[in-house]
Length: 207
Image (tube, rainbow, N blue to C red; front, side, top):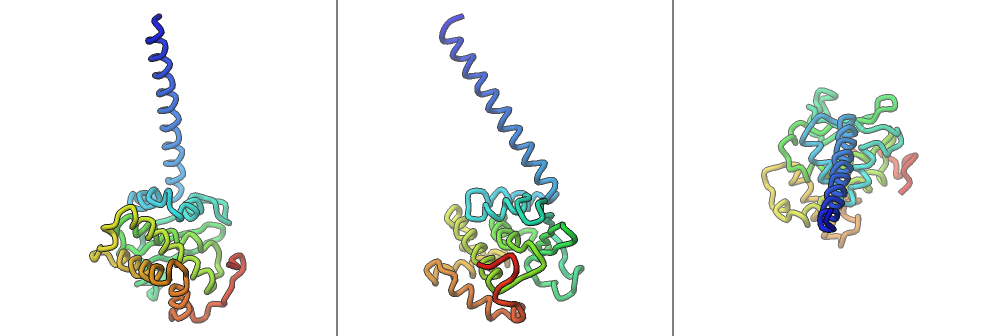
């Protein structure tokens, strides 16, 4: 066998092994996604979180959280849980040991990047306790992920068709106007009517 043929055969073998490994990784990830959601839009959002500061939240959704199991995520009419939740953008719940994230059905057609930013926020709520500090951290995470994704796709900053994208752009403005600190976001959280009864700190989250 000629030297060139041996090298070609060796290269083809390496490519085959690489393709098998790559295919296996895709299959393994697909199996993990199966435990999270059946929604293609949410899977796209989870993929979009890769390579951003939201990677931590993505890992939490895939199972690296206090429940030690994947968080179940789906779109839902939140009014069916409680009427007062009708206009919430998303809701995190814990039932027994299982964590859930419900994204408001009205955001089904939102850009995948906006859903990714929202999930980055919600994945930080992993127990039944909440606090001003936890919400501030979660809102800041959401804004920072959106900032990362806007660098990849600047057109997102001009999206006027999605109420969720509008929310993210408001948070981004707060982040930028505070020189990427959380000062303005924290002020918003402190004055938010839905958070008036929250303590400053909560068990398991002391940031």
